[in-house]
Length: 340
Image (tube, rainbow, N blue to C red):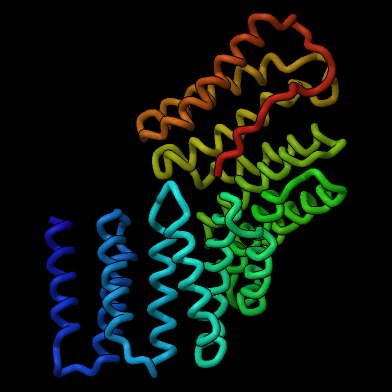
């Protein structure tokens, strides 16, 4: 039924685009509005594909002198491109081009919020491209910082928090082989904490949980001499995220967070004050978390994540079989899962 309704709306939109009683600008705007409606509903690839077709038609209909309208259509098209999963980078490159084409017109004719949103989305496109070695992560950071000129903490708390999260993950994605690695880690933690000063559990639950989960990951990842203290802080952050990310309401996000918490427990002594006592109890707790999220990932078809946590379970089983009652001092050297 949903598919039939979508097809009917797309046909109506295309018919409207050929209606001579409306001006070209009115037709273009109508196409854009219908595309945005498709995009904002529960996402499916068919809906996003239909929205992209409508944005393309809107750009063809839009008069050349309607530069602000064309910029708005291009920017919305860019967000739709970002929502389409793919193996390569073609859609990411197209999204980047769409935002870059829109931004000069937002600077000249648009509202500050439109410009900031385009800069934020441009940063996201570049950050994803940087993950595939097709862009510089520093360009993404620059775009986020430009967006923060408008999306400040007082007037736009939600956007500010998202930008802080994006900045932090960008800092953490940079190579950690030079002398500035610890500074970038500190900047990432600071950005997560800045975002958490603005959003709260009641008014912004999704953003609050995202920041707490990613703060926990940053604390685990940090190359600090205070590993135990960082892991204890990370556990607190994961527990805060789990106040929102429940198995009943957000099963995949819940699984991501308990997998991160399991990794934290794996690397934490049972008694932080006496690390020489080992971590048998924490290993057992970690294994139970891994088993639970393996089941969730398996049911959701997340085969790669299910494989990763299954391997973690097997490794913990081997450690429990071979470990003496009291383990040697220090933390285990395990590869973090760090799921978002």
